[in-house]
Image (cartoon, rainbow, N blue to C red; front, side):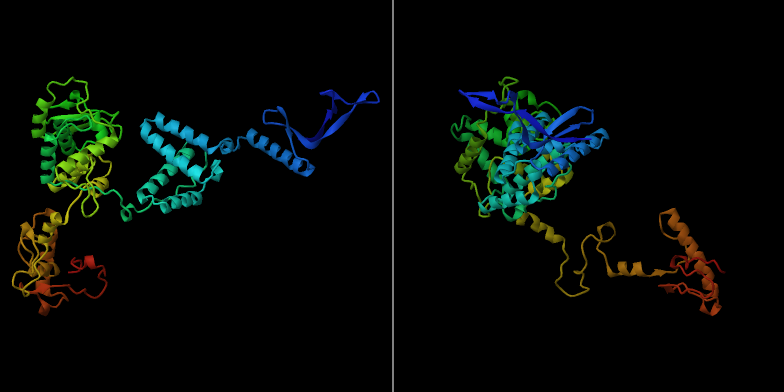
Length: 487
């Protein structure tokens, strides 16, 4: 049972700059504390003393709470999130950043996620986990939108803070993620940097002009042209190209390949990418005198790579931004690679594999660019609606057997079946048996008639659309109508 009391202490006073005890009538003077104290024992039986309040009733409530917590701890019903709720959000973000680095996330991406999350926390003036709410995050993101940030950028901020919330829950620091239901924006309504694919003529002109241009950003013209050709022929990203060495290429293989090590791949997986035969032949001479472990392409910093290709685009008279607002940058070479695969009739699954995408949706929707002229040929498959009915133009293409045009008689034959007396011209044995049973039934009905009257006998020229059911106790199921259970 917890004990509530007021502590006593020896009174002191200041004399000659020092604190000395107060002595009256030869005895020390003792005083009571202003606040009440609680003395209780924890789950292990250890005594503790905790300062309460000046109000005795409030201190009694505190004592009862401490006793309940000790009992819950002894019974294994502790609040395991209590410690984490007391920590600052900035401390949790630092721990999350360390866990990202530990699981193999690149330092650049981990720093970017941490920066975006901390901006939201600081912008919303949040201190602890219980202060974090979806409405606060939405208010800050709205402020970013009002400042002119794109829908894609705001979606990145939401993704970062939601990832932090999931980690808090998965790491056992929070019971739930209050940001789970947050959704990003529709980026299609606010595109700021849409890329386009280069045409074949533009590619040839870019490679030819770049090879003859002078040194730019530390790279010779032939090196830049080779870099662009490898990028547009393999779909490799700038970071992956930057870390290629001559040992990464197997030009004598069947097929020739280039290998991207897991440390430099975006999804942290070792990728082996096939090379076009003509490109492999040109790379043999290009890599002949290079050290095996030296970088093949000594590329400038990422910002200067963008400036480098823009300079070569200007020299090749290729617009960086077209009339629709789409741009051509270095990553557009990867878009061009995937778009060329689609234009060449490559199976979508093969295109996804060569693009090294996790989903076919990303390959087809984001990286495949098809112009209006590319899809116009698909309209040739539609039927010709001119002319009069019956002149042969109203039939659709390749809808009959063996690519033959379907006719109106094909449809009518599905609605009615003639009475036959010979073997059924079907290939399946099960279907033949069923057809033979029908024919035997029809032979009986030819003699006796459907109603049992010989006057209603069938002839070989009759066509049955829906045989009438006979009266009596015959089953009413439609599928049983053709069975001759009653002779």
